[in-house]
Image 1 (spheres, rainbow, N blue to C red):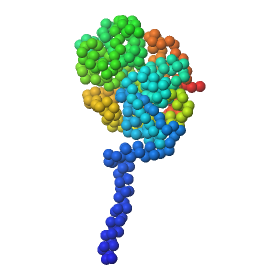
Image 2 (cartoon, helix red, strand yellow):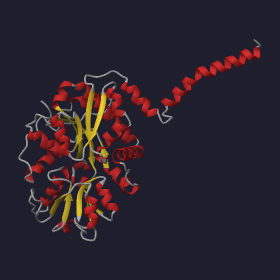
Image 3 (cartoon, rainbow, N blue to C red):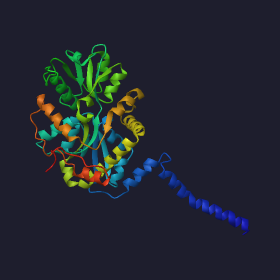
Image 4 (tube, rainbow, N blue to C red):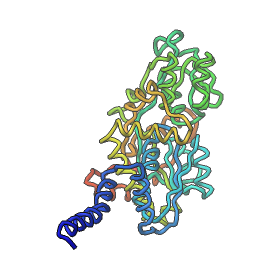
Amino acid sequence: MPATTRTTLRRGLAAAASLPLLIGALASCGYGSDAKNDEKKVAAEGKKLSADTVRLGYFPNLTHATALIGVQDGLIQKELGGTTLKPQTFNAGPSEIEALNGGSLDIGFIGPSPSINAYVKSKGSNLRIISGSASGGVKLVVNPDKIKTLDDLKGKRIATPQKGNTQDVALLNWIAEKGWKVDPESGKGDVSVVRTDNKVTPDAFKSGSIDGAWVPEPTASKLVSQGGKVLLDETSLWPDKKFVITNIIVSQKFLTEHPDVVEAVLTGTVKTNAWINANPDKAKASANAALKSLGGKALDAKVIDPAWPSIAITNDPLAATLKTQSEWAVKAQLIKQPELSGIYDLKLLNKVLKAAGEPEVSDAGLGVK
């Protein structure tokens, strides 16, 4: 074989040998449409934990951004290895609690009021709060032609998502502090509290059947896009401008039987939250893509752009604020004085946070003894 031919052959073989390395390097850098799918595949082929599957519930809502992004981008599945993540979406707290109680859901993202109600009704036997997820993202939006100051709310019709839900309790407490009276069951009084599903609220606002709404994002920004005005951001009512809007709960049975799976999910949520806070613009786009995937339509920029920065993503369950919210519900006569001791079990979360070099969080004296 001539020398020139041998040289050409050696070069060709070297190039062919290096091609898989080049492809692998590109994939590791996130190039190519299959990069995320490859990562999910690798995770799924990893070691299976103590459960074959874990069923995770959440809402298609910006205040559930940890779940939206953690599920869509494979960040939670990656930590589960060969244990399969089965996500489920819900539109309201009661249906998610029903699924948890019925054994068709293991872990869920949900608001504080449904967590409190479920814990109290079961006498502390059905769930534990194991982490925080989000703070803030709740606003009072009004028709500026009808309501110009907070005092103008008297005699007006103000919507909340559901009787006894987190925003309903907050509005009733605010009304009581103004010295006004409202019947908590009917919503009738000095202010008419109209319990309206968030899906319906924008149409009700547009038609004039309500004068404003105390609602979470992105509903609040949808109302603003229709000509509404933010009269009050609920964060202004709280010390340090923080209060729990979304926490993570787990079935006590699942926590007892599969603590390794719960720890893996929490590792995934902590890593997801770190990524969200380090990459707010990318995270906003990812959350919107998840909403589009779940509901068939992404949020307009005029809605998501003001909504996103009003929500703080956090691992801290802000337990002291949940305790305050329960006191508000008692004062509003929606519930009797609850026994909340044991509602939190933050041991696994604090283990994950310590491993990540982050500070531990408090259960405000409401943890498992």
